[in-house]
Amino acid sequence: MKWLLYVTLLALGTLAAQEHDVGDDDGDVIDIEDDLDDGVEEIEDSNPESSTPPPAPKVTYRAPVPTGEVYFVESFDKGTLDGWILSKAKKDDTDDEIAKYDGKWEVQDMKDTKLPGDKGLVLVTRAKHHAISSKLSKPFVFDTKPLIIQYEVNFQNGIECGGAYVKLLSKTPELNLDQFHDKTPYTIMFGPDKCGEDYKLHFIFRHKNPKTGKYEEKHAKRPDADLKTYFTDKKTHLYTLILNPDNSFEILVDQMVVNSGNLLNDMSPPVNPPREIEDPNDQKPEDWDERPKIPDPDAVKPDDWDEDAPAKIADENAVKPEGWLDDEPEYVADPDAEKPEDWDEDMDGEWEAPQIANPKCESAPGCGTWQRPMIDNPNYKGKWKPPMIDNVNYQGIWKPRKIPNPDFFEDLEPFKMTPFSAVGLELWSMTSDIFFDNFIICTERAVADDWANDGWGLKKAADGAAEPGVVGQMMAAAEERPWLWVVYILIVAFPVFLVVLFCCSGKKQPSAAEYKKTDAPQPDVVSDEREEEKDKGDKEEEEEANEEKLEEKQKNDADIGSASQEEEEEEEEEEDRKHASEEEETVNRSPRNRKPRKD
Image (cartoon, rainbow, N blue to C red):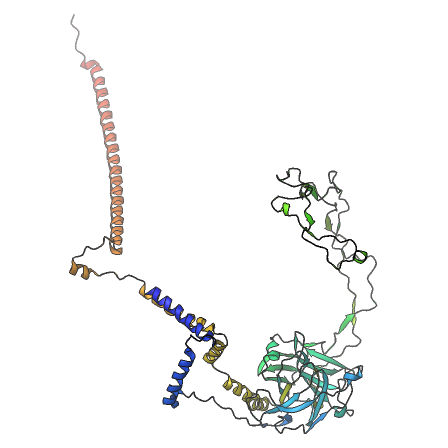
């Protein structure tokens, strides 16, 4: 059954793959797809309501409307460039052919838009200088409220080299939007920029030096997030800069923070210069010793140190292999080569056949003059150098002394930048059809969020509704690559095959009742319970043996004790008998007890 299931699954996968590879040139092959299509058409005719797929949710576009105070808004839904001024300037220090800001701007629908009626500003041409700007409803002054600038960008054709950043043009008497160019003073520059594989998200502000009155660009640190996707996925992305009066800032893409920091700590170069600097007039003393290690002056080269010994020597133990062809060259002239017909010896010189490997050397270990192989010289030591020792005169790395910075200043409120009164796009791009939309400059986060939800949020919802589900994407991929059907079938069938394999592979053991009914002999299998009982019995026997040994030992100790006691009693009785015999002898020796001698 297992093998049958496995073969069936493979057969289904193979048939599915072949079904998509059937050609029209084979007249004997039955067109399975046509038959299936006929069957599907009959089912659709008989039951049209059940076969009609549910319609995709439709997202209706409505132009966003600001929900609070704003300094600038633009959705381009009127279809015109009213309020925008095209620059007529020429770029300095550039060839006249490309110096003009003659790149074209148009208001268009986005390519492959899912929201009919949603228009935007499009950079139409490539390899051109483009500049366009528009006035704010009122100048923005940096005081006690945050600054929020937000807009959308879509690189419809990807991006090779170019930017999509905006400039907030400083409020100055000289500001002329007709002559807007790269040198026009700006307060903030913000937005994406890319050239080669360098993906950037700029935040630059121009800071005024309170001592000199000159402006210097301050660049935010590079974000840690990977920005490549925003340039390559051809989707609309929302860029937001939030600048707070406490000098903190946040940069968001699609309402997700990708960079944040503080104007005092996270800009390069820093807003405030250092209090002290190195004295430019200080010079290192001539006797200053910066060497931590020096050669040992007392070291002497050993007498047996041979500096002339070579690093490699010929192996004296090597023996020429048998069959080495000393008289045969390694390369010979090609005997099949022929001089070209157009060869001119006066012009080209004497013709010589090209060299090829000597065929006689193929079966031999080698050809030509045999030479001993080279090996490492065990006596090689190289050039002698004295060992390095600590320098007792080491004074460390010299640095010039510090002096007060004559240009030092301290600006603790860099947020209070130069007011700005216009917004502009001044760009060079090698890619066309960059789409801009839904600009807003305001001070309230809620207003910016509402504007984003009514604009960028609708685009995101429409794109999501138009995208097929996971199953649809898999089916579309399989239509382009029929071999994916085999992969899909195996992915689904393999877990089922494993379940069947593990569930059905165990052999069912007959129960004791079945043996009893059939009187069939049961296999001699020692059960786990019997093994446990046997182990338990062995343990009990071992314990009993240990107890018997202990009792026997105690008994032996008692016997030894009683024997020693009996020996002591016998010794005492023997001593008593000796004393009695001595006393008796004494009595017998006394005169009163002697008998009179007869004459």
